[in-house]
Amino acid sequence: MRWGDQAPASSPAQAGDPVTTGLASAPYNHRRRLLDAPLSRGITACVLVALLSSLARAEIPLAERRSGYEQMSPATKAMQDDDTSNPATLSVLDGEALWRRKAGDANKACADCHGDAAASMRGVAARYPAFSSAQGRAIDIEQRINLCRTEQQKATPLAHESRDLLALTAYIGRQSRGMPIDVAADEKTKPFIESGRRLYAMRQGQLNLSCQNCHDDNWGQKLAGVPLVQGHPNGYPLYRLEWQSLGSLQRRLRNCLIGMRAEPYPYGADEYVDLELFLMWRARGMTVETPAVRP
Image (cartoon, rainbow, N blue to C red; front, side, top):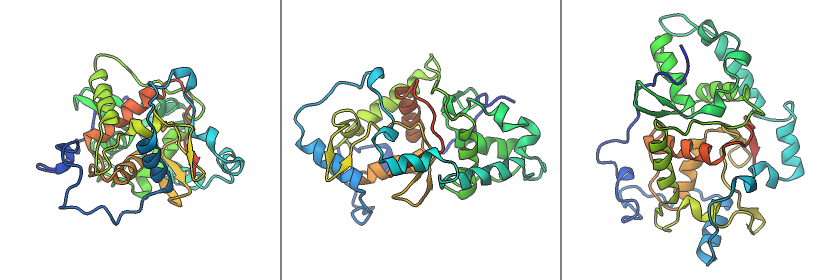
């Protein structure tokens, strides 16, 4: 069975959930208070620069795309570069153990079907999200892992942001480290890339900001010493020093929405997967750094 040929059950937003409608016209929803959510220094910098800047750049040319790694301090770069210092290495080792562990009513391990991950999973992270003919839409690696669990291992799916799902995703991603991102951009995936592009450019929340305001219009600037990066997803899941833990790209996207004072989508929502696919397409040709370290 090849990854990308099937999909897990979708995780749509709940019916009537305000995340699916009205974000641009209703910037704040009183049913869910987000004002007590912590706002990262990076988000604060994005907000202030976007509000003060009167000039906007065009979409970043491929030749000018830069990983967030390039804007890190030498100490943080050294932490990522050395597997013995990279705190995400522990999660990769956990993922390797889970890869070999039998689970579910089928009493099967990932390795029983896919063998040595160094060979079978090489390049997989560079190609995801990918189109699933069974689902009729793009799915990400986390969804693909849970499909294998439910259909092949006859096991319960792993919860989003759970230690085991992050570990398996990091382990699979590690097999593609150093490879160029190469997601498909064909007639099957283009509708989802375009959906992600629209979400990326859409102003949302109480602050009426878009992802584009920080990561296209003002990248490279600083406020209070906080660099505004281009926002490429080439290191996820990654260890963020701000979090003191490993986290997924969806966690980062939720943080951005909260920083914009917008209603975050539930984990696993189609909107996140479309954004992931667009961001990977936007970063095409850049090398996979999983598991990366970021401030």
